[in-house]
Amino acid sequence: AEKLLEVVDLKTSFYTGAGEVQAVRGVSFQLEKGEVLGIVGESGSGKSVMAKSIMSLIQSPGKIKQGDITWRGENLLGKSEKQLRAIRGNEISLISQDPMSALNPVVKIGKQMTEVIIRHQRVGKKEAEKRAVDLLGKVGISSPEERLKQYPHELSGGMKQRIMIGMSISCQPELLIADEPTTALDVTIQSQILNLMSALKDKEQMALILITHDLGVVAENCERVLVMYGGLIMEEGPVKELFQNPKHPYTEGLLRSLPKRSNGVKERLVPIQGSPPDLLNPPQGCPFADRCPYVMDKCAELPPYFKVDSERKTMCWLHESEEGDNHE
Ligand code: SF4
Ligand code: MG
Image 1 (cartoon, rainbow, N blue to C red):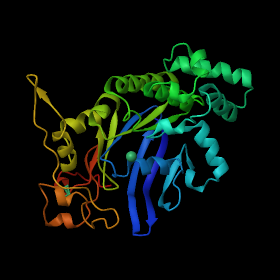
Image 2 (image 1 turned 135 degrees about the horizontal axis):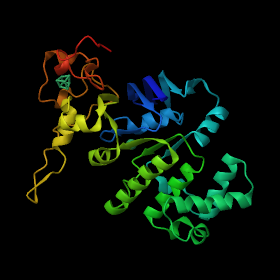
Image 3 (image 1 turned 30 degrees about the horizontal axis):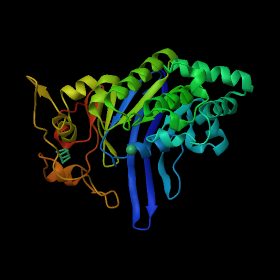
Image 4 (image 1 turned 180 degrees about the vertical axis):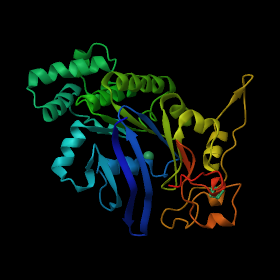
């Protein structure tokens, strides 16, 4: 398969009055054309900062400190703001955590959409209006002509989210990054939006990065998953195998904290005790050591990645001996 995106040893920090907050502490992964990758982790694990780093949208006091981000063979970190804008508009699209605030409340939907289309696709107003109607159809909005005449506050949350998705795919991106795209929506609308994104992914042949704290969303929508914690990837692998047989104690804990139903009775949740590491002073060793039931002396040193099989790696000393001679 063709490699679309490659991130190597990415580090992004925020330089605050209190000191350096190391939000992303050395993250590497790849994405293939048309792939659906899930990134899962609690809030503060570095997921959103990583997404913004890929888009070169980190603003002061934040800074990408180190690493390479290669998009279709070109290093994004060497690009000018003008070049980046062209890529952001046409090749990679980001739907952020708070899409509601991305719509201007005092401008009608139609005007907002046509402006985006005109800016990115260099077409006239009439053509842009036609495309806006088509896009709303694609994201499942009925009577699009009527919707285009409305203001954002006249529409429901789910409708606004569909419009945001429509705007994000208007340029036919090769990659759509969706950061907690459904958190603000109720459960039924959530699954409609996720189904919509999967359908669009197939039809438009996009790759999709789905960032979420919800393991269920990953299980149902993704092929491969990265589990993030404390600014690092703890574990990576195909979704099914990783959930069936987690190779990192943090993933194990996440899975145990998922509500399960047996015989219609809801089992008690087992939350992970303790709290995530302070990224102002991140631990030298394993970031999960404070909360890990298997912690041992060795964990005072940061583990490298151990390849537990050809498609899976984990940052945990427990798997040191399982590794063959395929060291990373
Ligand atoms: Fe637990 Fe040690 Fe593995 Fe970290 S490296 S997850 S502390 S066993
Ligand atoms: Mg976030």
